[in-house]
Image (cartoon, rainbow, N blue to C red; front, top):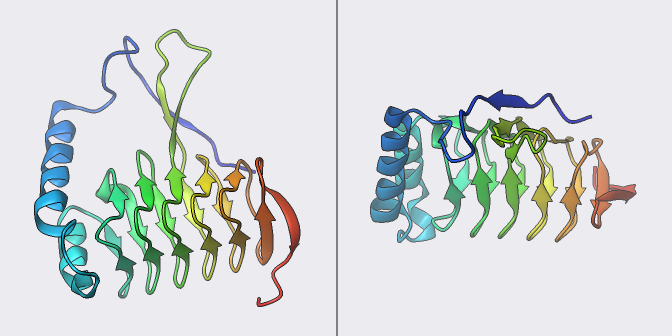
Amino acid sequence: MPSELKTYPQSTPYNSPWTLRQRIRLMLWQCCWAFFCSWTPKPLNVWRLFWLRLFGTTLDGRPFVHPRARIIIPWHLTLHHRACLGDRANAYSLGEIEIHEDATIAQEAYLCTGTHLFSSPNRELQTAKISIGPGAFVGARAFILPGVTVGAGAVVGACAVVTRDVAPNTVVAGNPAVPIRTNPSA
């Protein structure tokens, strides 16, 4: 079951839920990633990890972050040893994202921690943590919704839309994603 959504108060739908200080920090992050990281060759992973750590990403061991990965708020991201954030993968980290050891987020996959409270006229931002378990694989262009946990050894098929937690060692596919089998390599 997806985790509880955190709601950020907004007086109108046009106001940012972030403080001016947070917005300046986000702008600095985007500039630093563009100028110092996005053009670097893949072997310069240590350099990209340096900038991620500098902006508050929690790093455990040596994960891999592709230079064309997109990370919205690095201080909401936790990467464990040998976790991989692939080419053009999106960590839309308005809320927390944790990618455990040996987990892979394939190219153009989208981890989306934010949504809106559509029952309110102010459309307040809502966030919930996404957790990708050890050894899990999120396929190309898959979309993970806020609050979802992908269990250890699970596989999310390409282009799947994951609206609910994925049990460990389970393969899911489709829109919405449904279990199709147990992962035989687990």
